[in-house]
Amino acid sequence: MPLVRIDLQKGKDASYRQKAGRIVYEAMVAHTGVPKDDRFQIIAEHAIENFVFDPDYLGIHRTNDLVMVQIFFNEGRSVAQKQALYKAIADGFSEQLGLRREDVFITLVEVKKENWSFGNGIAQYA
View (cartoon, rainbow, N blue to C red):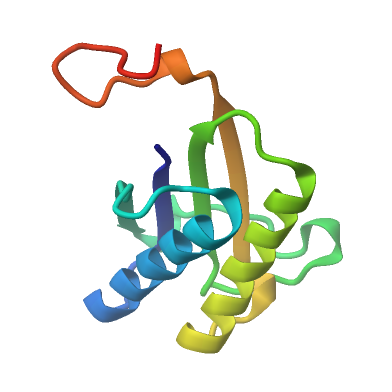
């Protein structure tokens, strides 16, 4: 079960935000074995003063259109799967949202299966 956070500056319409969520979800299903319908996302907009980033870290020029994607999911995916996921998300954002690939920032947080409770106070995967 992944939990996805998508953060961006205020100003994009609801359709843009929902499409961003769909792109990430479809990339996870296609490249990391996430089951169909396993979609839990938080999409948040931030005022410019609360959305802080270095515009040129590692020689990658970022603009105020930057979208930060953070995915929490179970351990166990290969480096190749992760690389395919990064590429699919960046490609999807570029092709479907018109976002520059330089403005797609992705982090993965891998956790052990026992660290999830999907409800009822039970660790369903433990």
